[in-house]
Length: 387
Image (cartoon, rainbow, N blue to C red; front, side):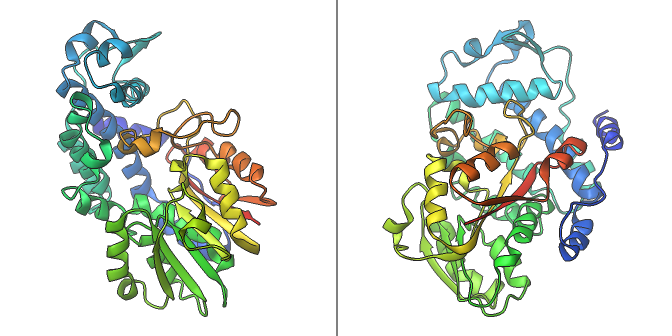
């Protein structure tokens, strides 16, 4: 039943033939955005919705959902931090057809198909070896209940030592879903990879973007400064990147995007390129952070953002499921018209934020909205903003 649902969804999609990239990157894109990528996205979406429902049942919500329940009644007796993630779960399950929504009430009808093994089998058939995100959804269901019941921090539950190997599997270029983030950011950064250029990577994490840059064999870079706020990722990068990303002139430092760069050892420094992959949406004061980054670009330098994107702020996307439990994802300064909601943003909000920060040119790589409108699986994009 689920297999037929997914195949019907696949057949109704209009798949983009061209992304509008330069010829070199366009040729590479044709190898990435194919049926396995599309099917894995669709499977992940359906899988995440069913994990969300299984988690709701684990939390004892079934009886109330069977008769119809509001968010307030479902989180009654749970820790106050439960409300925002529970709100997201309900909206996502309703969007995916697992719950019926009537006003503020949600109802579970019938017997939804929760055969996760069938979905895993289909994923292995369509995209062998690319189930890292499914592993993380399973781990989330297993680990997150104390967030609701005992008020434990999502960061501690989902980014502890037990799950660290799973995150490393997810943040790899070999994971085609994550590779798309790095690929589009690289397409936006390539003009800055010239001899003498200094590059600053924000939140470099597992180092997969630096590996992709190294594979371009850019000659004569003056500095590739790899940064992360997490000591574990930074230590791992210092140990492994010189071997797995050879040829880049690495320097390493801790960096928190919520603090001025000049207070973190970068006073007076300017870069030809600053790049962050799925980092800046967690900046608490996003307009201030973007302005600070602009001040550290050399004349003509470019800020490159690779981000998960939403077609509309009120439309959940499955990639948010992991991060709804992170206080850093939710606890940000909201700014009407610029950043009216926490989490991932629409392409239009990113363009407005970058222009508000004083960037003279903002380019989408590729032009995002036409692709999002015709291909629901296209929820990643990159922006190049010139100083």
